[in-house]
Image 1 (tube, helix red, strand yellow):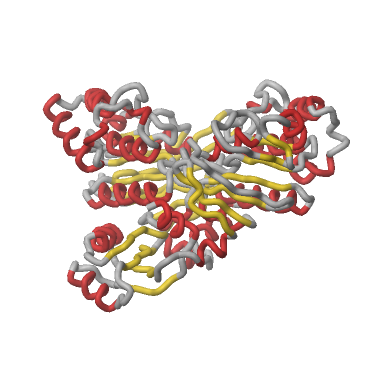
Image 2 (cartoon, rainbow over the protein chains, first blue to last red; image 1 turned 120 degrees about the vertical axis):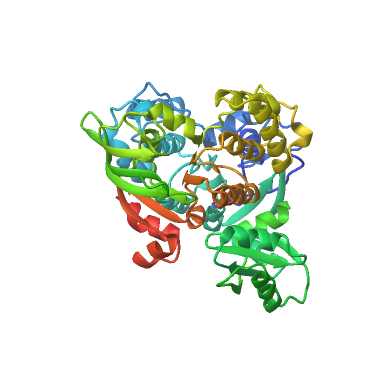
Length: 284
Length: 242
């Protein structure tokens, strides 16, 4: 599940684990939150060892698992109260920290958690993970299956929590969210492919990359895939991102080839790599 | 009925008590079209889709899918469409081969036809080495590609895909879309929901639902012009904050 990974997160950092399902993100979260033993290696959270000091770690971290894990048959308020009590605190004591988030679900505080919408469940889970004022917040795929509007709101909330001094480790399969982190680790198949700031990771992309467009997307992809000099061909929105195996690449030549395949309205323009391009290149 | 319109919807509405989940939506989808059906969580997409695939009765309005009326011929609709749910719906404890045989059988394909389909599908997906493995042991990306192929096993006129690529790695996500393009190119209509806005750009036309209504419907290019937005993500953010 995880193979010999090493990384560190600075205090106050918003650190992203970016990778698809099965990459090992949840396993890593479980090890760091002391819920699972690693076979080998060491891990420290807030300078505490995940095995020897597990009790102390549990008091100083907040964990929001990917799967909704609150009590479905307790109300919103009861859930929050429960988590506050477990950690020996009260809602009142740390209300300032969750205020922004909690006010959005407060109108439904007497509703059972199981009856909340997806977006509201997510806000309640985040409130419960924060109610004991953790130093580090672990968020396992908080935005998976969430629409773009709610995702944006969620990330705005994370930024505000970061400003309050909380270190955040967040995982996501959405590559566009990577740009919102201070630093990211690209992870796939239990291995970290690269760790750096989003900007630096994009700069490491090894090849010039081109936007290609034509009248028929399916024929364009098929034709590019059968072009003898292609290195990679990936649809990106309305374009296809194309890289060539040669160092001396002439777009005109490619255009002629595509015309010979009966494609028209061909446009080929140089573009800049995205994190997703980098991820795919590394994962190849 | 015009043969080219595989989905015709007019004023389709679904109410649950006082709550109107789908509010008089009207649209048409043509043969071979890739139609993106977008909306925020809770906007009514799933409810609308359930009516179109014949598993939920509309409160009012009209809808024909694959030439059949959703009110009177729901069973005929089910035979003529493919459906892939966001939850993986093949049997984890059957092998690849057994799953194909099972779903082929459900749709009433002959043994010979199932055999033929299996060979073609296994070759197209490069599953030759794992055909006798339990589906549960396959990586998510392979499972999703297999699910899609199985949803097409009876050559349906339309395939409905409910968030088919959630959580899938970016390379597989693109291979998946190549399969969608291929199916559409062969005349299958594709009706797809997604939360990846780059995937919205891959669609021929896109509708965006807000609070039960279709608030926008056009090609991605025209929607971007209409909302003066750079990307479909911006269009979505401008519109869906309902």
